[in-house]
Length: 107
Image 1 (cartoon, rainbow, N blue to C red):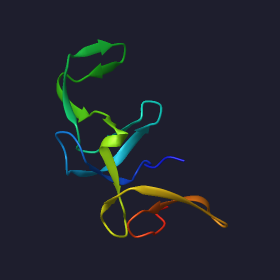
Image 2: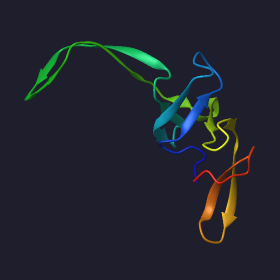
Image 3: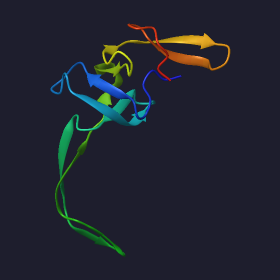
């Protein structure tokens, strides 16, 4: 089970965007990276391409680049603080994520 999932709110704890909070758009588990909205924005200079029926708009395109998963912390929805994630096994829900600060179930 992953500590961070798609749709979670995370806070960046290292790098140029330190302190910024955003939601997780994509998780790349094999590369140990996550894509967070409005974090690590890069600019790609796109050339106009007319291949077949599709056309690509030319210009400068900004999009989010992946950030290493160790540089983000999950924001607990209950206590609104960046926290570490623990796991507990319950009878009815199975293995669930738990906030280390307030001890509430995150899932």
